[in-house]
Image (cartoon, rainbow, N blue to C red; front, side):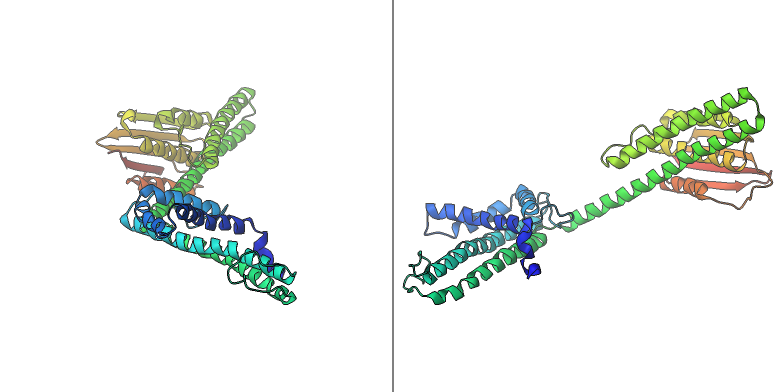
Length: 385
């Protein structure tokens, strides 16, 4: 019994009832003007449904009253973009007029019928419901009072469910809207992957520098060197915190633009961080970096950061040769360092894989591995046109 009456405790049941009442109000207003032409409102709705903005208004109203607070209700809130959408909107308005008016009339006359049956059972004259004018008062009418109330319950719940199903069918997203939603979701997933990769690169670089610096300071036992190491750790940690705050801001507000990301113009801080960790960095930049497009420059910065992080993590404080070259529509980057004997030349972690993925997304390519002269090399080429 409690399960049967559960719909009566839900607010959605009553907002759907309000949605049923709206068409009846429009029809009732017209009947005051000309009772002989009740079909005119349905005829007027045909050109109205062809207006693109009507679909948006009906979608907003349907989501507000038929599916309040429901995520993924399947009801669109965009204007009609095609004639098919306009036709579906016209069908929705006609269905809403017919089903809504029938449901609203049922919610008016069924309570009135139950009330008149109760009056007859109490020995009083009926209140004017058709077909009960000639009925004589009798106690047996009390047995019929629950019947219109049960029908009222069925009308309120059933017509509300019917209107919700029709709204999802006729006001649901078109094929073009579903495709756009799928593309948006794909872009969102790609953005989350990019953010995860950036966190890996930024935080991984900062932790690597901190570990290398702390280990070198402990081994050196020199207060002056320890001060320099702590300063380098502080600077690297501050940069990582800035990156973390920016990324968390993007996660908190999905529409916030991803501004403030470092580019190759900020590569000096990477080189200085590596030098502060004890690596002897020989860097050379040729060509106009300012001509490199923003997306390529930002990804180039992350690739260079990951390459230097791998050097510090696996080779330690060794000489590093960095070459950045912009020429003939290509951005070339090369990071080379001696390959320690303890380092496995076949080991390929997520960092090198991330470098390859970044290059591939930009239409370039990356190559990494040991060279014949005993060096480890990361070579990347990215198109900039």
